[in-house]
Image 1 (cartoon, rainbow, N blue to C red):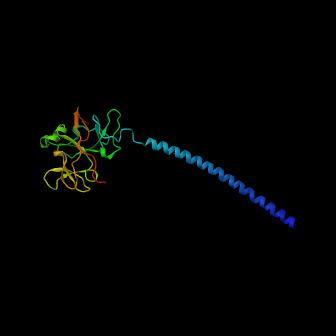
Image 2: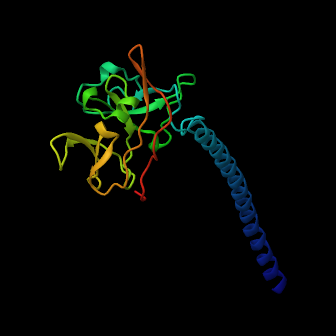
Image 3: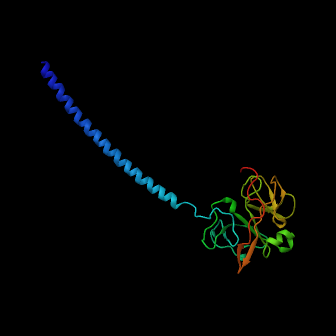
Length: 217
């Protein structure tokens, strides 16, 4: 009886072990296959990430000779000409673009520029020196907390239109080197000298003044 009982138990153990071994082998094959798929997918993601990297020079500050292109709207990426700027405003938002490499310097928000056309007779002497035909350019980043300067509105303290940051209501007069006329901004907007050739605008020099906010945005 004990032998029969032993034989029966041994046979049952063998029949149970074989499916378990098959299951473990199948699980191993599945793990290897999934690992290979994951590795391939990861390599694909890496290649995609590399493809999406900003090109060299796209985060550099505007360089002398850069052309200016629209940074928003239907004409985004297109060259800005003097004819695109209405007299008296509103300003146009722009990026600098390297004409040799065609790289738009849009990888840093600090590179966005405000361009506006005003009556040259309204500009003070320093502003007029940096302008061409009444066209002047400034950083589009508020000197207070680094918010974008987006509005062209009548000043809270005068009868002229000014640049205004809607975050904390800082106002800048573009006719007078973008000096602060209202609000908490501690300094004027950085100015960007311009040149004009065959109707197209280009950068004539580096930013004059500090770009960006005095406080974290």
